[in-house]
Amino acid sequence: MSGAGGNATQQLRLARHHHRNQRQSHYSHTSFTSTDNQNVRCSPFATYLPTNTPNRVVFALLIINKAGGLVYNRTFAPGLQKLDGNDYLILAGTFHGIHAISRQINPAPAAQHLPGYRRPPTTGLESLESSHFRLTCFQTPTGVKFLLFTSPEQPNTEVVVRRCYEIYGDYVMKNPFYSMEMPIRVEKFDRALGGYLVRP
Amino acid sequence: MPGPVAAPADKEDNFKPLPPTKPFQSTLRYPSSRKSIYDRNLNRTRVNESSLASFAYLFNTLITYHHSKSGSVSEIETRLNRAGYPIGTKLLDLLLYRQPPRTATRPTRILELLQFVHGTVWRALFNRTADALEQGTEKKNEYMIIDNEPLVNSFISIPKEISQLNCAAFVAGIIEGMCDATGLSTDGVTAHWAGEGDELWPGKTIFLLRFKESVVERDEALKAG
Amino acid sequence: MSVYAFFIFDRHTECIYTKRWAPVPPPQQPPTTNGYARGATDASILARKALKAEDDAKLIFGTVFSLRRMVRQLGGEDDQFLSYRTAEYKLHYFETPTQLKFLMLTDTRVGNMRTALHQIWATLYVEYVVKSPLSPAEHPKGVGVANELFDGGLESFIASLFAPQ
Image (spheres, each protein chain N blue to C red):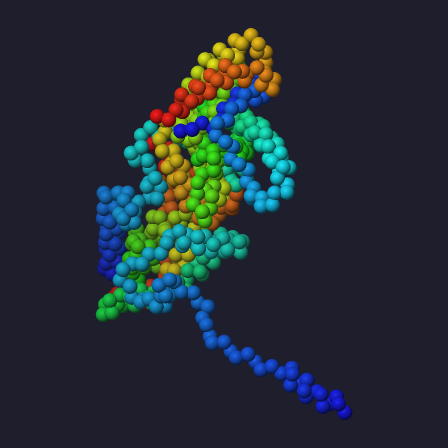
């Protein structure tokens, strides 16, 4: 009996050992090309760690639903004034209105578009600069607005905000326990955003 | 008596033959290649991957449905388990069929089965092996398959009020179905969180297999020869 | 690079000067085949255009006012709203210490226009409007701003900025 048990544990150990080897090899060639990535397995939150992006200062991210309600509000780095929750709600509502108006007052002549194709939609406010910060707004085709507050020097804010949308698509929209249009309290979303935007 | 005479004529007029039956046309929709899944070979050597996003949305709907129908965490888990069970029994057949014909054998011993689940099944479902295989320290009939980040949980965050819930119960159901199909039946396979406080793998999950006493006895008898 | 419009608002939130360069996009309406109501529509179009210009100025001021407030709220009292951009146009903003607000709408390829707006204030507005003996201290309904010198100076200054290279 004891011999048989020993045999079992040995085999189990073998299985574990085999796995450990595999994982070490994963760590050693973690690359971000699309082909390799499929076989590389590491913690899902580790892949978002900013690698070669110095000077990334992202102050805050706000998400406004299509009705103008604030559904997500998170600060990543100090730099902006602290507001209380109510003020943030008002700010979101105000911005929702401004965004619509900024579409309305478009003075540019209508862009040429190919006959038979739909006229390209006019976008609202996309980027705002002040002397202290830059606000990048990305509106999804479904009307959700992502507001990213960064330092004015931060490059590629469009890319960053689109990545936030992607993380939102993954961890919020695919989460069975999130109800639409409601405030986002989703642990993995927080974690993934933190891994992507918080400077180590 | 003009009435009775006219009546047959009326009947004549009203008579309409049944329209000829239309030839049967299938409403089954085919992909553009005109090949449905029934046309494909079951025995595929190359792994054919399906979209993780599609799976995520489908699984999402499954969970939402069972969540709305159940009153407690354990009920959701039971329902998910039951949803996975038939997959397990069918998957066993498919995987054995796909093995090279001469070497294909049904696992008949507990350890073989565990290796099979840990390796072959996990590779077929998730394209990798499970992360560890352990025997319970207290009870001889308890085995654990450990997955650091179950694929089915990739996009799922559990709200605080039902933090006990582990949606990998679906996978546990698959394993349970597989165990029963091999004849090594269990008293249930359950999924449990084990990643509390684990920074790297917060979603670590243990699949606990409790084999029936009779199965363990038989296994030991076989081992002894 | 092109400029679409230029506005000055005074501290009473009134628009005291407007200048437009690009034509306002024509109102969307199907071409009338039978011209029996032509005269009436022409008049109403003109009226609507004037109304739209007035409304636009109000909307623009409202937008800028809210954004300015938002920027102060988030960036602190010393933060200044500089510009915003949509995919179609860009709005540049400059506020003098006397709360005169200079706005310019350009296309999106134009860089920072803050210095240009500052120059308009310092070398044109102050010189030709403030120092004009005929100009009142306040400019209700834009009285005294659109004088010949300021108008011409602004025209040539903008022309030199956006001259085709």
